[in-house]
Length: 81
Image 1 (cartoon, rainbow, N blue to C red):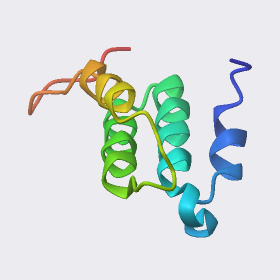
Image 2 (tube, rainbow, N blue to C red; image 1 turned 180 degrees about the vertical axis):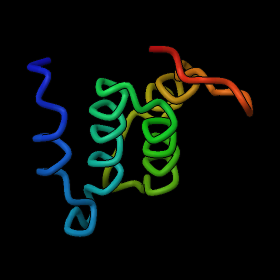
Image 3 (cartoon, helix red, strand yellow; image 1 turned 120 degrees about the vertical axis):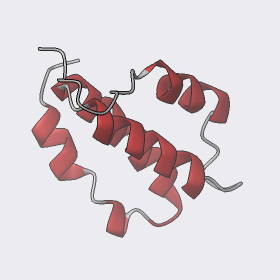
C-alpha cells in the first residue's frame, strides 16, 4: 500500500523462508504486480501454489484468483504502459 515494492522484495528472501515460502511468494507476487511486472507476478503466484503445504496454509483459491487476474501477454505484444 505504501508503494515500497523494491523494499518489500528485498525483505522477502524466499531462500530463508522455510515453511513460509508460499506466503513469501504470494506477497512477492503482489509487490511485483504493483511494480507492473505482470509476468514475474504471475510466476510468483504459481510458485506460491506449488510451494503450498499444510503448514503455510495460504488461501489457495485467493492466490489462484490473483494469478488468473494477471493478464498474460501474447507473443510479440508490448506490455501496457
